[in-house]
Image 1: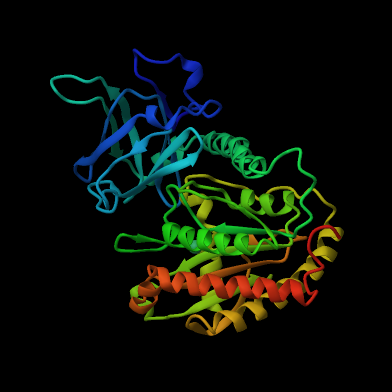
Image 2: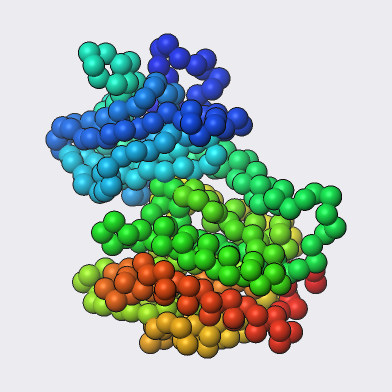
Length: 421
Ligand SMILES: [Zn+2]
């Protein structure tokens, strides 16, 4: 436990509650503690993070290496912080992100400027007209000390956090299912899984106050509505709100639902020094990236779990490798067909990248038996693309073109590799 700090206010809940913050019994929305302000104090040697709260909360803080981070797990909190509050760092804290990681659980992830240790963490009760405050104190250390303090059990800590996410992520999916009447006959329609990227403390790419996680969620919801209205397919979303979902869980949703198609929705960004790029790109899975940009992107997207503060090791596969290999080969053929149809439809509605079809090793596209594509809708780093991404008119038109592509894919009988085979 060397690197982990786990405490709770002296006058609050019993110890048993601390590491699984109310995950099994989410409180009604009205009763979530409110975080009303956050600020940083101190310098490069010692930095303090202070969070104003409506009530005391238990917490659990632990460091993660490469990049240097501290993760703070707390019960679900209603964040009512001023926009952009986490973007400006101070001292040892480069920036911080916050959000829901599971029903009942919120997380704050601090990006550090260098190695640091959690010197202290505590909750102060309301006093002298001040609200209850959570305080995190960081202290500069050298890398060797950081790594030593990085628990032999940081991995264990990280894993148990993953365990929590998985256990509670299932009910989220279950909610989607229970929305259909359990006594109804099985729905014979093909299942389309729509997967808005990122969420919770993982913002994805960003431009000013526009975050990829919000832009792609809005697009995904518009696409869902569009498809559901036509009634031919059953739509399952991997998330419908600002929640963190691990990549493996997204793949699991596709497999558990025996999906006929999996569509992951993202928005890219280029670092300024790498010039400008624009337009939508459609990605499929491959062992070798089709070009350097595809490789960079897959690497960035595959980091989502780490950004959400979760360390994931590759999961053991449940099915014999040879079966996966056979299924995958067929699945990839169908993924590629859909990608081509999608490109043809999308270019009638929006601007495409100059090389609009690419492939790379995206973890989220790895369901062996579900044709899967990942759409990068455009670049938030490009002014014109960003104008599109925030436009309702553009969204509706482009979602319409994706829905069209799905129709053509199934109408042509090209989708039979989907579930059920
Ligand atoms: Zn993304």
